[in-house]
Length: 217
Image 1 (cartoon, one colour):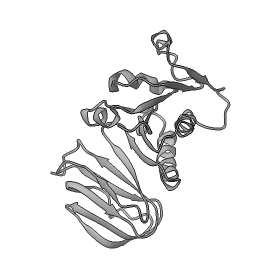
Image 2: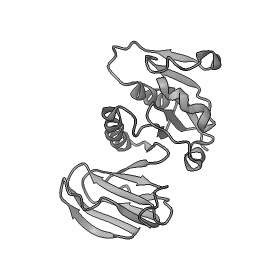
Image 3: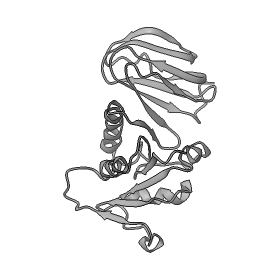
Image 4: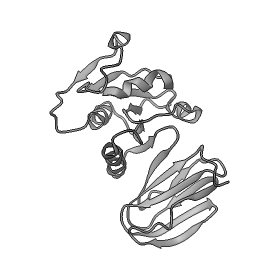
């Protein structure tokens, strides 16, 4: 794994699947506050622990004496996750996996992570979000996307704007040069026929995939 690939451990729900463990293996890691609780389950050891530490009171800090901590006050202008991403970029990150970015008790945080993913991708970062059970990828014009999904896995395309030129290949319901109105549910609950490829002419979208959910098979 290249040294410029980072895993950011966030505090959302996380299922340490074999697929996710393989994705983060060999990456550098930064924990954002309570996201440290996922480190052992994923078999990675962060090189930095950032945040206001208001959601990690239950963690045995003494177990991580060699991990530098970068504390921030609770009254700050960015989330712990954004601070962690900035720290990774300062260390030369060009690819980032946000683990624990989906689900959990705070839907506002999960939504912010999805929007931030698109913004970071537009800024040139290769970025993926995962909870283990679910993954998210940005889909932008001129940036074809391939997602290695098992046959029968569910996935959806969520348009953040109206979309034109949407193409989905190797799926049960393929599309070619399709125009998707903003707010349409047409691209919800598709089924992979193997690795799925996407491309887009204009607009911005998110691909949400459930690699272990084979209920569509």
